[in-house]
Image 1 (cartoon, rainbow, N blue to C red):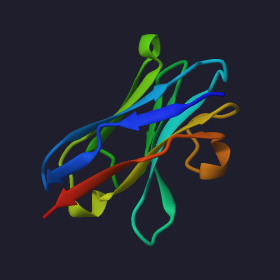
Image 2 (image 1 turned 120 degrees about the vertical axis):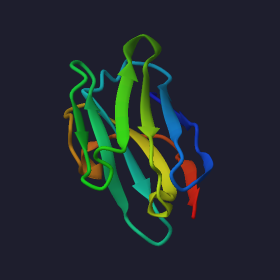
Image 3 (image 1 turned 60 degrees about the horizontal axis):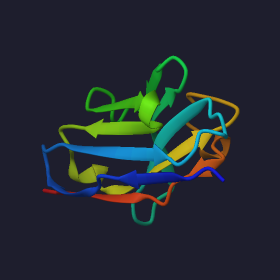
Image 4 (image 1 turned 90 degrees about the vertical axis):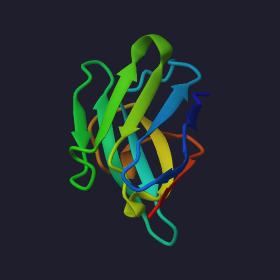
Length: 124
C-alpha cells in the first residue's frame, strides 16, 4: 500500500518561508501526478499545486502563483512545496496527494492516495 508522509510544517511569521516535503514509501502505484492541497479550519480542501511526475510540468492555483514552487526528486520519491512570502491566509493543513491516472488536476477526486497532512500556521 502506497503511503505518503508529509513533513516540514510549522509556525512562521508573515513574509517568511517554509518548505514542505512529501515522501512516498513505495512507487508501485506508478503515479502520474502528485499535488498539494490545503484545508483551512471550517473550509473545504482546495488545490494548491500539482506536478507531472514524468516531465516535471507544474500547475498552480492563482492564489499561490509566484510565491509557491512545487518540485520533485525522482531518486528520493519525494515531492516538495517551497513556500515564500507567506501570508496569514496561507494558514491551513497541507496535504500531499498522488494520482494513478492523471496529472495536473485541481480536483481532489482525481487523487487516490493522500498523506495525513501537516499544519502550516502563518502569524501576522
